Image 1 (cartoon, helix red, strand yellow):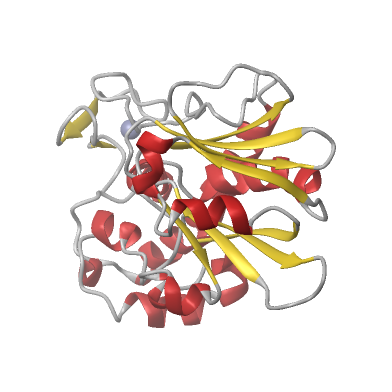
Image 2: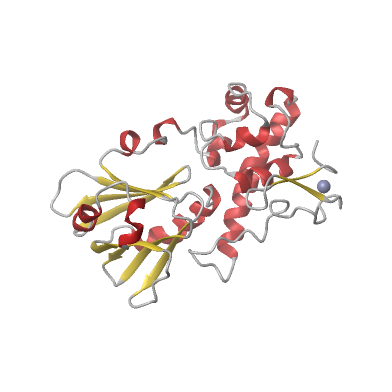
Length: 275
Ligand SMILES: [Zn+2]
């Protein structure tokens, strides 16, 4: 599932190519139309002739703001890719993958395609995202703003939650954007075991968690963007330290990396150097 870091890298790549562009056509693969939380005919009819004014991200959602050339209310395309959603920027005539859900064509013969191999993504075409997209209004601050938040506000925020650390990091009301993969990486960076209770954290451990979130985030965005074979539609997690590395050797202490849970949704950590 694309998390904050991956969507942020995508946004950085796609925004300059889409912002300010006029939408010339929109089309939906009929058998995937159920992923749209909006009547499909209207989606295809209403998007063209609108201009994409900005591409932003909120938690694990990509948010396209649009306005009509002739004025009128802004309207937002909000996409939560869930487990299997991917994006692709393609030129005219490039083959369309079988996972294709919809395409927005913009001036300059560029296509933005949304693909989904799990058919779990959620696509909204709305007037007021905070009201019309479930869960959006309840999201906590963006995980990449903890540095600006400062350690004291972070500590206060932490104390409102009682979860185990793994669940806490994935709780979108605590911080928006972190999921299963990056919560493993953040806890590894902070040297904290995932099943620790939040209330058991000592002040120095709270600080370690506070510091690990932006460190892991920035490193991941840079690693993703530095990959010479970067493709919007592929998810690059090769640089991760523990996630999906169950049974391998810990890069920090040499201990064997542990795994709990399924192979598809594993929880990975190192008993050698996480406390
Ligand atoms: Zn270790």
